[in-house]
Image (cartoon, rainbow, N blue to C red; front, side, top):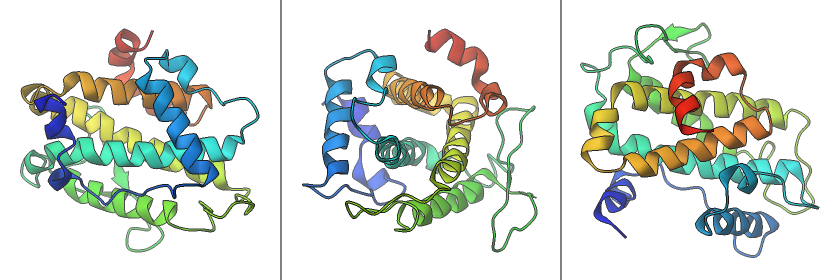
Length: 216
């Protein structure tokens, strides 16, 4: 493995513990299949498509957990440079500011620093994907009817991490030589959410120009 990728996959820099799939489960097999397609160099637009005979919710669940893990790693590499001083507002350039809202402390959309927003975001996603009522792990346990709505919220918020990293911290990514890896992660994410219409087009607006160049 080349040095830049070692830096990106440095376990000490992982922002959160990885949520793993249990070996022997259907979701573990789906995860392996998805990874094999990517590792084989299959066109990403084809690699994200639902395999024949597989359940959409299972396929989506596998990818949501995988994207959570990967985007955690990416943010972890720039988190030392994303501070209260450098990033007092969670934003994507001057036009886009993201405010945090949840069901507990922040019931109204609240302006926060980027690192504080990221911590709350990752904590919130971790709670969702570890909630058996939302992401069931037992074979035969049905997904809730609200599953895709929850997923859309998770992925929309994860997209904001890409926005912040690309616009405010890309010099750090480039300095580490990790640009190609981060771009690959982004393309995989983008093709997936477009394939299953999991993010509103207006949410994708901040990276529209870059995406048009990168994702043909």
